[in-house]
Image (cartoon, rainbow, N blue to C red; front, side, top):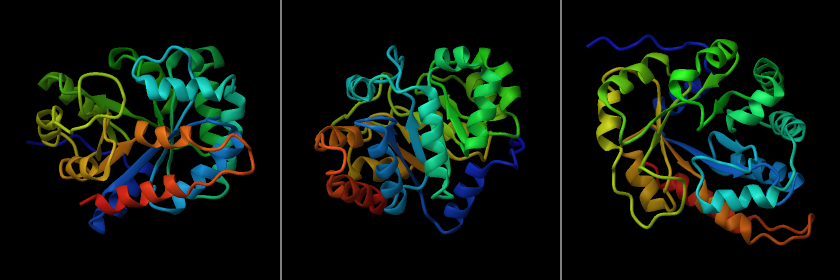
Length: 271
């Protein structure tokens, strides 16, 4: 069976290829911009990337998230009234100090209000490499996909409920990596990892070589290890956000030791 032709300008795909060549799996930590403040997000982002994080996924706070569970919803609330322009500056500051891929998770309404083409261009110039939009239906992404072409990767989703036809369409248009939602539901810390997405992951490999990363519900090194046995990368969000919750409130007095040790343990667990 012929696979769809790979997108060959993707910084993210090239990064995955380099890691896979060295038999490494990719760790994608998620943090929310502005939780608890933008200065802390910048410092924490760089610490994470220096200590095992491979690709950083940064959330744009939004008050009506479709895919996020309570932990990430509360993170967005703690971030308060962080504006798109402030997140743009945050991306620029992080990009100035790292070459690792940066991905933004944002909902479509703020992007639409900002202006989709301007959003793509501004964040591309800031150094962003990929964009995850959980509430943008696959069937309605044509316009944004054209605007993003050759600038940054519009990340596609598959879920345990994705049928064969959807998997083929996702594979055909995938860039960067394919976000494999591990369970039917929202983000959050879960006790077990039950492989609901296993069948979809195994099927889509027949149609594409674009890297696969599993997210949603992965909260400890054991779960990360099991997920990495199926895919090229693992996305961890809520479990990191839970640790950010306990950071002291004073801006210049934050100890990232617990978070960084967790990142190191996650990275070490990947097979």
